Image (cartoon, rainbow, N blue to C red):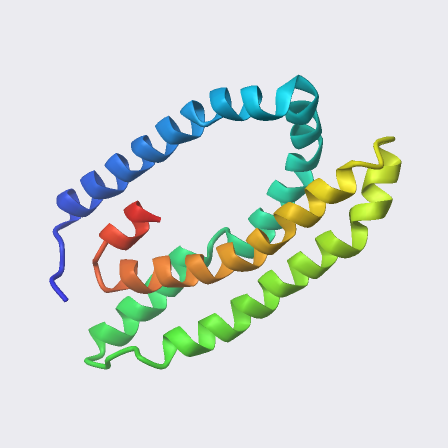
Length: 153
């Protein structure tokens, strides 16, 4: 795997971030046309709790794993043991977040006064699990000084 320079890696990450923000802005127009104002309103009611669980299950994972991988490589090791260990740990954390979101969906929807929100919580719940896995891979590749997978994701 070819290592990237700091400048090239930063440029790749910046380009990926810009494209992701652009797609994030553009998808709202057809989404609003598809589900309407009420649908967007329901989505906005579910989104804060989803972001909270996403933050707990994914924030800091890439940087901590990349640090571990880089440290192992600096010692002349392959760092192969970091990936499966981190994956098990963070899939457990992401799974707990998914289960929490599923379990709390009826109560949260009830507290917000909109029974239909249960379906929104259920629809977003699996992504908490999946984002944990993606974050592990991001950290792995960042530790190998390959920023393309992070930018692509």
